[in-house]
Image (tube, rainbow, N blue to C red; front, side, top):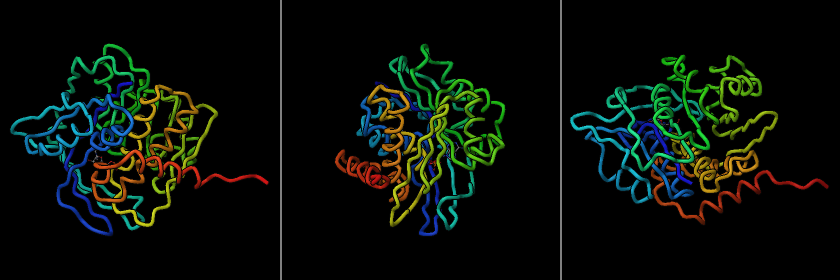
Length: 305
Ligand code: AMP
């Protein structure tokens, strides 16, 4: 089934305890579409960049089967820029700088060929834009998933509450879940966020895995204990792309299938953190992905005597 992803395509500058990069390619939608491309062949992108964005990266997306008809390239303008610095635990980070540039006036145009998509992934971008995308689709997709972050809670609270009413699944990290709900216990936070609209709430806990809440059902997926975590940027988006890509490839949105989706998403995120930026997602094989998924299976499988 087809997937439409909307979100940032960006330049990032990163600093981790292990190194520093100048401007490299990043953006929520970049990670999401690359990750989803390993599962679904109908992968449509809506985003905006400036004329400083390299054609070589657009070609990489196309090579992964991503439809870039909805990627607007604005002449004479600059691409969104974000820079972040990670703390020693690599689980927490500070935003050092955000330059909205083209994102400041992003007016998402949905190409006709993208209408009737069954799955919609609203990657991290302004909540008002996320809402506009939903309104500009002629038919409501089978599943709408939204990712957001503290930046929008601080700057666009009311818009965020509006769009949350319209979505089925929200992914959010633990700190942001506490900020959004005002609850410190994650079970209570998930229930409060669920009452804001999304029936399914996924709380990402970085190196401590992810929790999936749906009504009274809860599922937990660990993160793979990796020897080296090089750069966690984009791990959350890669996770979301793997999750929704897997759901789109099966067409099944049941809680049981979402459990499998969480594991596929976690496996994809475990690759992402192994290199700076999105590079590790450029050349994965189906075999590598399946091997990782099997590592997740054995990580927490045990027998009762
Ligand atoms: P993640 O590490 O999964 O939270 O995602 C990091 C990506 O989000 C980076 O590549 C950034 O370019 C992008 N990003 C950071 N802040 C924003 C923002 N305010 N709006 C849209 N994208 C952002």
